[in-house]
Each structure stands twice: as C-alpha cells, then as structure tokens.
Amino acid sequence: MDIVSASQFRRSLWFCVYLWLIFLMLVTSSAGADVSVTLKLDRTEATIADSIRLSVSVSGARKSEPPAISGLELFDVSGGGTSSRVEIINGKVNSSVDYTYGIQPKKTGTFTIGPAEVNVKGKTIASNTATLIVIEPGQASSGVNRGPVFLSAALSSTKVYVDAQTIYTLKLYSQVSVDDISLSLPEAQYLTFKQLGKHTQYESVYNGEPYQVLEVRYALIPSREGVYGVRPSRMSMRVFQPRRRAPRSLFDDPFFSLSSGRPMTVASEPLELDVRSLPEKGRPADFSGLVGSYEIEAKLEPTEVKARESATLTVLLSGRGNVNRIPDLKMPELDQVKVYADQPVLTEAIDAEGLAGSKTMKWALVPEKEGDYEVPSLSVSFFDTGSQAYRTIKTPLLTLSVLPGEKEQALISADAFKEKHEGDAKKEVKELGHDILPVHTSLGDFSSGSRAGTGELLFWTILIVPILIYAATFSVLKLQKRSYGSLAATKAKKAARNFLQQFRQGELGSSDMISSIRQYLNERFDLSLGTLTAGEAVDILRSNGVGFATAERFRKVIETLEDAVYTGKGQETCEIGENIPDLIKQIEKEIR
Image (cartoon, rainbow, N blue to C red):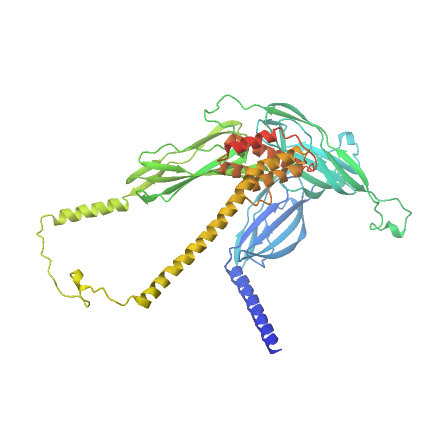
C-alpha cells in the first residue's frame, strides 16, 4: 500500500508540474506574442440583396475590445457572435479571438471595408482592408418565377485571351431544404475547370423572393482560341418539401412537416465564351506563354564576401494567372565568378479570386578574386490581362563586393614579413635551459624493458576490444541496410509492372487511378505518400531525372483525375487524353 501510495503521489506531483508548465507557457506566450488583426469577407462580389459574412480575427490575445470597423456606413450590420481559441503547435502557444458579423449593402458600387482597429493593452492595432463589389440582384426573365429550387451560372468575363482565366460561378437558389447534392460540370475540349476554395452559403433575394444560396466558384481556363458554348451544369439532390396538413395540427410544427425527400436535378443556363489568341504585335522574343499579372524581386545575401566564399542570389517571380508557365530564368556567365544553379521551386495556390503562385530560383555565386562584381539584371515577359499588352519586368542590378580570401591574406602577410626582415643578420640559437624531464639524445638511452606480461596484454585488450565491437556493429548495420536496399530495389523493379497489371485488369475510376499512381510512386522511389498532388508528383519525377516534358504530361494526368474527383466523378472513369502504359514506360526510361 505504501508503494502504491508513493507511486500515486509521484504521478500526481508530475501532473501538477505539467499543468503548471502549460500555465506558464500560456502566460508567457500571451504576454510576449505579437498581436495581429485580420479582416476577411466570405466573398468579394455580391448583390445588393445578399448577406455577406465579415470576420475579424485578433491573433496573439485571448481578450480584446470589440473591433471598430471602418467602411460600413452603407451596410446594415448584425452581430454573428464571438469565439476564442488557444492552439499549441510545436510547443508554441497562440491565442486568438474571432468576431463575426453579417453585413448587407444598401446600394451598389465598389466598397473598401476596413481597417478594423482593436485596442489591446492600451495599444491600437489595425487590420488589412478588403474590397467588395456590389451589383444589382438577378432578375427572372419576363418576371417568370423559376420555382423553389433552381441553378444559375455566370462568367466574370465572356471575352478572354488564351490561357487567361475567367471565373465561372454557380449559384443554387432554394426556398426548401436540400441535401445529397452532387454536381456535374459541362465537358468541353480546351476548357479546364479548377475549383476556387470551398462553397459558401448565404441568404439573398431573386425576383423579389427570399432564397438560401449555395455558391461555388471555378477558374475556367481556355487553352485554344475560338467561340465556345459552355453547356449547362447540373446539380442532383434530394428536396424536402412541407406537406399540406389541416391547420392547427400538432404536425404543423416544422419538425414534423418535412417529407422523406424526393430526387431532383436542376440545370443552369448555357453560356458563351469568346476566346481570343494573344496578339502578335509587340510580342517579345523571350515570351514563354505566361499570361496574367506578375511581379519580380531579387535579393543577394550577403552582399560582401571573401574570395572563394559563396553568396546566394534569390529571385522570386510571383503573380496571378497560368503560373505553371513561369519560365526558369538563366543566369549568364560572370567573369571570375562561378555560378551554381539550384532547383527552382514552383508553388501554386488557389483562392477566391482565381489561380496564383510563385517560382523561387536561387544561384550560388562563388567569386575567385577580390573586387566589385555586378550581378546582371534578369527579365521575364508576359501578357498583362489588365492592360491587354505585353510587359517585361526585370530585377535590379546588384553589386557583390569581394575581399581578399584567407590564402591571399596569408600570402600578403608572408611577403610583407619577408620584405621587412630581409637583410637582417641571423642570430645563433643558444640553449637556455633543460626541461623538467630529461631529453634523450640517443637510442642507447632507451632500455628494452622486461615487464611486458600482464599489463601490456591488458592494455592491448582494452585498446582492441572496443574497435572489434564497433566493427561488428558496423557490419551488422551495413548488412541490414544492404538487405533493406535490396528489398527496396526489388520493389522498385516491380513497381511499373504492378501498376500496369492493375491498369489492364479493367477500367479504374478516377479515385482508384490516383491511388494506383500513388502506390507506383511509393514502390518505385521507396516513399510513404499518404496523399498525392500534381505538384508533388512532378517534383518526385524531376528529382529522379525525369525530363520536363514527361513530368508535365504526368502532371496533366493527375490534374485531370483530380478534377474528376472534385466534381463528384471519382467513381467514374474519365478521358485522360494520355496513353498511361506508354507514359509509365517513358518515365522508367528517363529515371536515372
């Protein structure tokens, strides 16, 4: 009993200490954390009949005064509640408070909302601003009522250039409860749909009637010029409509008044998209097909080094548009400077406004001699969809200052020492004294000794045994590593064959096809991927020697499968437009 009691006491003590440490972490992190305020709207475009969700997040504080938000004079505002949270990520504690509001515009126009200002511990902190475009609500043609459930489609622009994106917006209007919704997007050659974030839900008015609206947005990207008829999208669902009952019945309560639901499919109106080819006039010679709006920046770190030391030039090209067309910039040869290029890193992002991303390119610059070196400007050309003209952006000229290296400094110092003391008379070396221990001047001073025996054996045993143990351990680990490597090599050889066998067994759905491709990459390159994106697949292939063209073909396959999964067709086969067996064989040929 005493042992158990002592054990319980120790556990209780450690638990109290643990709680105390967490408390200290919370207190110190809250006290020292940087406070920031972020303002966000659930969408950037709405009608005058819509209700928009506005949220203000105060990060780094568990308590704060309610925010004062500018730009809401022409909106009706209703409070949506307050919530707070504490997160511990990698030992770092972050506290935040979220304020939610519903706002409804009183007139049309373009509005700047914010900043939101919050007072925390006597200090006023301001947030970012957000832009909201308010338009007139949709009207039913000829005043015809479209019923309790209907689907509407619209394009942000009906005239675009090749590879430029337009926003395709679908809105499901309903006056009754619906669930089990599935969406079928129109299929059209040379048109690609990419979903922009998650769907949003809000209240709106159409033709004078109130509706609940479910909105989903896509970036629609054409790859060839022409006039396209965008066929209707379709949404299938279960609809729950109230039953008609005698008045004043117990079952008039909404809890009892819903039917079991009936299936319904609604279709949007067809649209037309005019896609124009990029103009020939003014097209730069180095134009790579990049379309959108982009910025470029460069940084050299450090700007001062010694000879044969390294400085890093980093160029970041970012923007919005077909970012997968961002070219790999080439650094020209520099006199007396060795240039080593790093692998470019492409990052793609999707938000409410469309496709965006950036490419980071780095070079190591190693100067061989001292002096000042000019790092040349790098440029990229693109078609600016805003100005509808070609633009060329450049990095600024940078200067690298190089000091003498250590070896050069040593040579300079040696030469200076030699010149300074040249001609001086050599001084005779004299014996100043003896060390504490005698210095032997001949081999005869050493006796052979006769006490080797046990002491010497013990010495060699102590010296050799650890070496033997280390050698044995190293051999065992090496054997295990070789066995593991042999197993991994065997799996890699069979990866393509296993994939092709699965592929030829029958038609695979889009979800199963992505799973098979992920299994192939895991086995081929000894990975443990749980999920797979098109960007990850390309990075894996490129890092293993697969050419750019083949990796891009593989990317399009993954993106086609992802689009099928995201549009509710994960269990169906889709037209990939690629001979998968031939593509896998080509990848196997190029892997180094």
